[in-house]
Image (cartoon, rainbow, N blue to C red):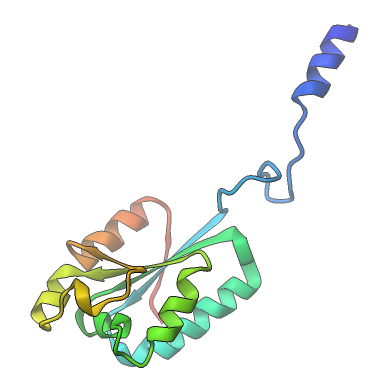
Length: 137
């Protein structure tokens, strides 16, 4: 009996309120923001900041830009500083290759923190299949 109790105590782990093991880097929540219009970028960024304030390190966020939305990610764009600042806070950015090409942009027009994906809508479908919540402010 003492051996069983000792084994249980050795294997005991501390779990937080979300049922994750303490010290785990896995996030509980995943959110996908769809940005297909540069004019909605301020609202998207406000929503991201609010989500980070609420869930902190417990959320992984991806922003997928397609159509006019890819302009939000441009190095020379008015949102460049916001993109760079958020990229270090569990926020990733993906730009649609088709949209970049149709607007005459290349990877050189984007900061390094932005990933280029073959298709914005394809990325959205993949992320939703992985359990990301779809948000389009």
